Image 1 (cartoon, rainbow, N blue to C red):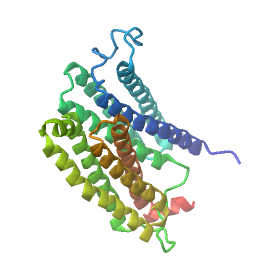
Image 2: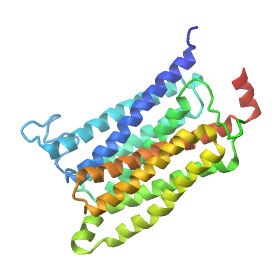
Image 3: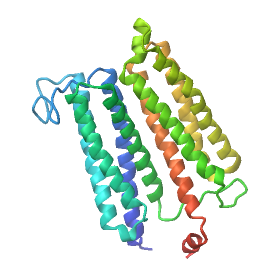
Image 4: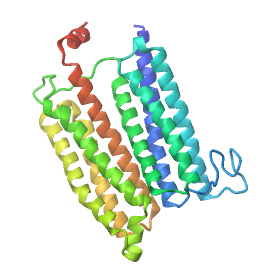
Length: 309
């Protein structure tokens, strides 16, 4: 049986969004490695690096990290442009929410480029560096939501534990609230990292307030994720895989956070893995949020009739 053009289009855009999500999470990880290795200014100019697209004689680990970070950002920008353009051209055959969301993502990418330039030209001001990370995580969240909304050809059906396909009010609001809590924790971690607060606290005793605040807020954020996973296993059967993955990631986050502190941030791989798993956690929670709200919309009688038809 031939695949309908609308379904084929959605599948292709879903695949693009999936690859874009992987590139964005990798970009956050590479950005973390660039910061940890103090390579943020390894390329002293922007957008080129030592005046060329591919620096040769100056190439070392630090230069490579900063150069590859920019290369990945460029690939992400092109992919977002393709997604936004396709969603507007074919908007009559796609969900109504996709064109504005894809357009907003494109604007954020443009803003991210400006922030990336400012981090170099303004010599890594902590406010700009933190805004750069926050924008990256917002992009991860939006693309993750787009991927969930486009994945497959049918509607998202959130199935409760009793087998019904309803959606409780509390679940639709619990998912975004937990996502915001984790995002806030990531933002606090970014503020701490951009000021090198943990390192200064270990070496000279200054900046410890940021470290204590990060650890303090981490507890309720982690508890919220674990509680969401427990609620999914209790009431929302269809969301158990993603909720379980979120719980696993938050446990990994806790372990990596403890390890990085015990090692006094001396092992860059542990610190980078901590940031990378945070980006993955934001992606998973954003997917749950998108599924909860798209599933909530599907419960309207008109939408159910269209789904049956």
